[in-house]
Image (cartoon, rainbow over all chains, first blue to last red; front, side, top):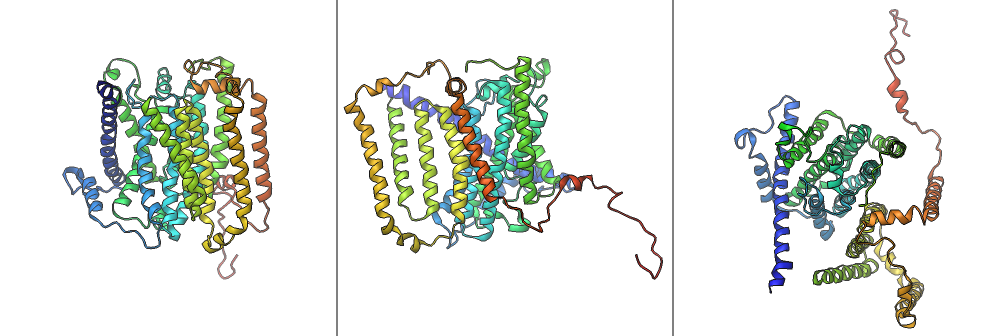
Length: 339
Length: 204
């Protein structure tokens, strides 16, 4: 019996508590990201944004959530019931499971696996399923068009994200996310790999279906795309999933290019602040860029989106992979590790 | 140990069950979705074997790219379920034959444990010790040295397949207006606006 407690029960309880400790702040962050988005866009457009519910509009996300919770879940009669219900769940779950490998500080990570960056890449490439399933199961033209757009778009931009990740890996010599952060102690990777940082950020916008690449939703042409038949909590799951994906993508950007939990300078006033706070600040900064882009850019036309992905980013990132590898070998900076 | 065994049986059972469902469900889209479930469980089995790199590559390549395109095509098919079922009897002999051949081969593999008990020991141990080195590194050590030519050959085959697909689908149509982005960006005030004095009553 003692064995059962020591080897099975306690580890399980501890892991569940760790998961709760990650997921609860994440969901609060998602709630406030929706508010931040409306406030930031309001400020950019010289409006106030939501300011009625609670002081400074701070209770607005909860009011929205409550409203969605009390509405009726409508399943269209022509819909494929099972897939229709699974699709939003898949989107939401996939946006959460990626956080298992994100390091918040040295050693502060739920699963410190050797192939962490591949795991993240795999999870982000699965995000397309929720959308495609939703679009097909709705049995509606608009939803289907949104799903087709999304499938093509996410597969295209995944390719350049893959090459950007390879460039970073060449400089690190490990697939472990903590190792990737530690390799940036001298210099954050966005300085030597600036073009790749830009490619990654823009591909991240496309991968999370954010403006200016929000063609799968494209409310001016296909109403709300794949979400058109969804209401109430199933819609809320899509919504939460999209924003959690944005935060995950920002966290990935921070880990790969902005030095994760590391302070900008390893000197007195900066390294007093603990790592997780630096990490959160960097994520917030990248998220602000996401919102800024949404308020500034018009939506891309679909053929131009494909052109940008295949004819600009793919060759550029391929050249940078070769160039980085060449420079690392020629100068002898290539990392030698046994991991 | 118990947890590992339980995980193995769960992954294996779900993989086999979803494999059966791939061929037995009526709706092709459901088939593809079950295929994806089977891929996931195969990835889970790889993780249990300690081959986490292969597991992740399986998910990235098969689930993240191949199956998406599969689903993309199957979704767009206009499915006539009656026509789908009508061919069942006609193709049953061929299908049964393929199934029998596979079953026979499977039996041979399992039978090899009995007929040739030394076969298992003929496999080499993993060349660098799996406990000392991460399997990504271990794969790289053999893939780019011992199997470099085969690796390149695989790349060449993929390249040929890609070129073939492009040759089959690319066609030059007449009268298509194409956008030249460089030209558009290079356009300035000088070559797009012209100011003319128009005399009253004559036009340009």
